[in-house]
Image 1 (cartoon, rainbow, N blue to C red):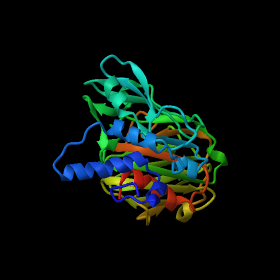
Image 2 (image 1 turned 90 degrees about the vertical axis):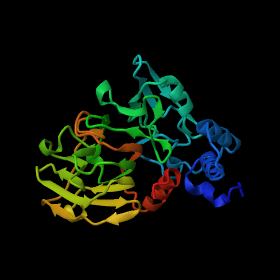
Image 3 (image 1 turned 135 degrees about the horizontal axis):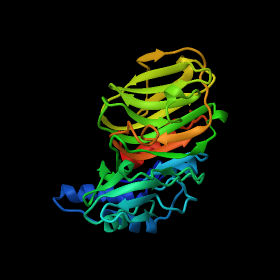
Length: 328
């Protein structure tokens, strides 16, 4: 027993033990009418007493091509989580992971009463596929007028219509079965919002794919190397969601994509196109078209890209992510 009703089995959930204990403590204090402060410091201290890291996601399920998060995913990763620019003077500073979580205390001290914007989210896969946005107006926000942006009381980044970024060139042409896992807070399903796109414009580049939200649907599409477009549409709602998305090549529209929302597979409401899918090597844009327009309007906490089939690991990966963020 760790106290507060948490058994040893909880250690394997992929959650910082300090975060688990703090959340249990917080619920008890709030129930008694108290006030809880200094969350990041308390979690860091509790984790320092229990340095177990065998439950980190990329330690359990390695070989991701890119992994972006506001918690520690990789037990061998020693870098920072993000780089932040403060609005007051445009100074920038790396923000570390302390005790397996973002050092929000240092973050808020650095940004002061202004905004904190994110020019870089570092890739924890160690492949150096950092999510980067050099245009100030297009950067994600993590501090708003001195207050931490959160989702379910955990740090998050907030998007606007132009916010997004890009990773270096990724060899998609050698991939046949790829998976994206994303912890997001969907706040708008009407506007066109790009989650991922492997080209400046899928409609004009053969071999590109795109995942986007529009008109109450999440749409996964590919324009194959022969110039034929294939797409599957899935109904989606506004809420905190864990999206698990699979794309395959060399197959038709019926086998091209899969979508799981909060662990449940969603059937495509509409399919279109003909021919088999195919990819080419391109830059991966995350959160906006070409990193500059049609941006995702909600909040993001974690995004992981695997270049190989994760069907056998999907449930365990989803369980790990959900255990930390408490999405469903």
